Amino acid sequence: MRDLDLTTLRLFIAVCETGNIARAGERASIVGSAISKRLSQLEHQVGTPLLVRKRHGVIPTAAGETLLEHARGMMDSASRIERDMESYVAGARGQVRILASVSAMTESLADDVAAFLKMPAHRSIQVDMEERVSPEIVRGVRDGMASLGVCWDAVELGALQSRPYRTDQLCIVVPAGHALASRKTLRFEQTLAFEHVSLPVNSAVQVMLQRAAGRLGRSVIHRVVVSNFEAALRVVRAGLAISVVPREVAELQAAAYGLHVIPLAEAWAQRRFIVCFRDEQALSPAAKLLVDHLATHAPPET
Image 1 (tube, rainbow, N blue to C red):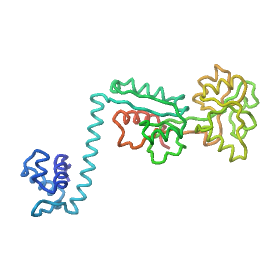
Image 2: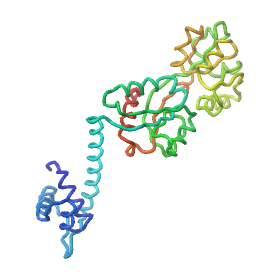
Image 3: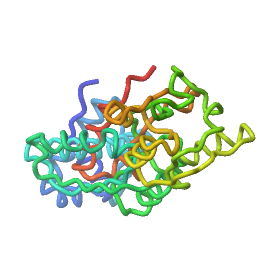
Image 4: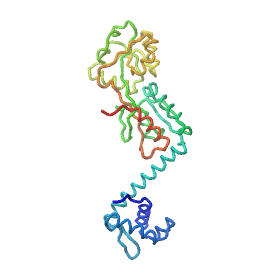
């Protein structure tokens, strides 16, 4: 079969929707005889009748109904292609709001968004970011407060869709001279005898640590609760407690603070981040471009 012509398919849809070739011609500003000719050629191309001519109009055959469904899908795809290409040609415009976890914000999201905005085609896009804990991110995206959310993939997304983003490794950070400082790797259970610097109780990291401790019949001993990882590292440097921090964050300041960064051995310590949204097909061109950019940083699938 030769390639189907989009103009002919568009006219075929109009005829099916109006049930009349003349009315479809009025809608498309084309004479009915020209539409009839195109439809005859289409039927010859697919090798089967597509329309049944009635006294007061036409109705699709079974084959016509099937083609109608496919034709509508092709029209939707063609419209998306046109919108996306217009974004590249003219430069996408719009505002994108992101809700992001403290881990994503601290580690790489700001740098990745900055690189996106520096591209000439994106100079008319504005991106606003706000730090939230993971349950608030999902709720905010679901309720339309933001177009995109960036969080740990272990969070319950409900009906939201997602694309993969970056990964990180959770580690134990201890001050020099600490009893654990000489270890090359640790299991989480080995840290529970020591006091911890913790993030807020509803943060994704803290919920996960409490559950891990609960499975061991233990609990995390909280000495200090802080709102971000930088504050946690300062408390560790002061020798008040140890903390679970992503290696990608800890290593930025470990040398300056004289800290030891020790990877956790558990599989859950290898975290995957995602970009979540309500419906990818309904994203604005600017938001879709940003999602595609962030997804390029996802590790290869294994």
